[in-house]
Amino acid sequence: MPLPHPMTQISLKRYLITGLVIWVPLVITLWVLNLLVGTMDQTLLLLPHELRTESWLGVHIPGLGVILTVLVVFVTGVLAANIIGQRLVRFWERVLARIPVVNSIYTGVKQVSDTLFSGTGHAFRKVLLVRYPHPQAWALAFQTNVPADVERQLDGDYVAVFIPTTPSPVNGFYFYVRRDETIEIDMTVDSALKTIISMGVVAPSGNGRRNAIPAPPAETQHAANRN
Image 1 (cartoon, rainbow, N blue to C red):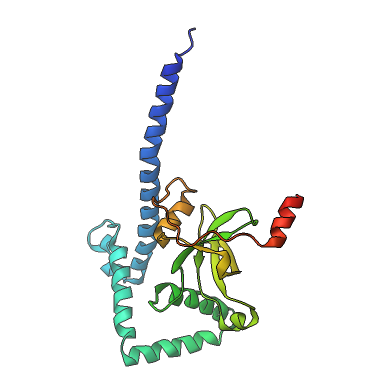
Image 2: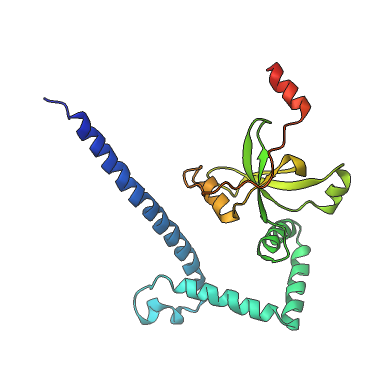
C-alpha cells in the first residue's frame, strides 16, 4: 500500500490545525457562556413556581436568570446607595462578623472585592516585570498595595506584587520587592492577563519598556558565577 505523499501529510496537518484554531476558542467560549447562564438561571428558583416560565409557557427559557440577576444587583446598588440601605448593610456586616467561620470568609472576600471594584483601590494598577523564580528570569506581575504595618517593617522603597500562574491567573504568589528591582511596562492589565492565560501565544505588540533593566544584586551574580 503506497504511503501518503509528504506534501499531502503537511497539508492535512495544516488543515487540521486551522480547524482547531477556529473551533477550540468558539467551543470554550460557548461552554463558559453556558456555564454562566446556567448558574445565573439558578436565581429563578427564588421566584414562586407560578411566575416561572415552566408553569405558564410549559418550557424553560434559558437566559432569564441573567436578566433577574442583573436586576437584583442593580436594585441592591440603588437601595445600598441611600442612608437607610447603608445602615442595613452595616447591620448585616455586624451580624456576619459575629459568626466565627463566616466572618473570616466574608471579610477576606469583601476586602478583595472592594479593592477590585472600587475606584480608589490599588489592585492591579500597573504591570511590572520582576525577577522570578531566580535572578536570571523575569515574570509578569501586577502591582498591588503594601499594607501600612508591613511598610513600616521594610527598610527601603518596596512594592507589593502579585505574580499569577499560567494558565490560571486566579492563583499565584504575593511578594514584596524593591521598587528599583522591577520594570514598569506599558501594558494594560487585560493584555497582561491575555498573555498569561495564553502562555505567551497571544502577546501584545510594542516595546513596552519604561525603565532600564536593573542589574541583579551582587550576591546573586556571584552565586550564579559559582554555579
